[in-house]
Structures are given as structure tokens and as C-alpha cells.
Length: 238
Image 1 (cartoon, one colour):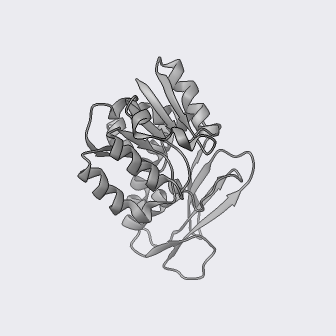
Image 2 (image 1 turned 90 degrees about the horizontal axis):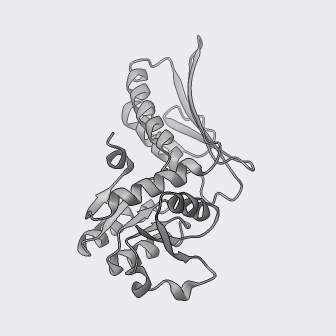
């Protein structure tokens, strides 16, 4: 598999290491230092692109991949206000996309656990629920895309909560997400249910970027030869 890496920071380098160890070739490495290489001709030489950049560049990057006819795995977060636009463009170009707020296999299992726990807790109104997330200081968006996914799963099941907010709130219908930025934390997410009697917590703590990078490579392997839009549940068969 020949890979184009769009974004060659810490995550891009971790993806490269895992991809090469699995026998794949990173044919193209793109970042702010070589925008002139980000062409349809160069992309067409690759089997798949893996995009980890920023909320400000992700949408344009995805559209370039669709226009070039190359499948793309996207790990950038913070741009989902334009999700419908991307779906439309992908379908019009007969493109291929895997998008996930988090590519870690452990986190995707954690998503399933979070949904199941929220369903159980929906019958117990004495518990108050909130979320916490911690990332490194270079994380550009807050709350994290993973925290938003977790919050939306809770909102679907805990009907007393109407919206998530990224601050402390006295409004009983708000689901609080408290964000902290502390180096060198790769990522910690906690969902906490509190009652006057006891607390129930589930926590996922990443020790490094390997889990995220490995999942992105797995998603790329899954996507090659496919058309349409997929997520990590489909990649992992959950």
C-alpha cells in the first residue's frame, strides 16, 4: 500500500513508523513546508491518503483528495460544522472516506462501553453525569473530538441533558465537558456519574500516540478498494 501523509507532525511520524513496519510505503509527506507537492498528480500515485492536520485545513484537504480520486482517512477534528458539505462532495466525486474522532482501538471500544453505561444510567435520575478530558497543550480544539463523541452518546440516552457545554454550568440540562491542556498528556477521557450515595466512573487513558496511529493505518488498509463513507465501527466490525 502506497500512502500519502497529509500532515507530518508527531502523529504523521507515528503513522509512518507503523505503516513502514507493516510493509507499506509512505510515498508522499505533506505539511506546511512543501505545499507545492500537494497536487492531484502526486496524490494519484498513492493508494490512500491519511489526513491529520487542523480544523482550518481539513475540509480543503479532503476535497483535494476526492478530486484526485484517492481514498482518504481523516483524523482531524473540530471541522464537523462542514460535515454535510463533505458528504455531498464525497458522493459527487464517487469518493472514499473514513472519518473518526479517534482511531484508537481502545477508544472505540470505550465508545461502546460509554453508550451501554449511558443506557443503564438513563433509568437512574439520582445520578448526575459530567465529562472530563485532558490533552497536551498543542491540541488545537477544545473539547476534543473524542469528548464530543462521548458527550453525544450520553445525550442520546440521558434525556434530562439537552446539550453539552465546555464549561462548568448551573443549568441542570447542560452536560458539562471540562477540558484541561497539560503536557505531555496524549489524551485522557473520563465519564463520571455522581449520586449522594456513590460515584461510577469509566476512564480511558492513552499512554502514547501508537494506538491512534495504528488505528489510522488499519483504517487505511480497510478503505483501499472501497467507495463511500465509513467510520471506525465498520473498520473494527463492532
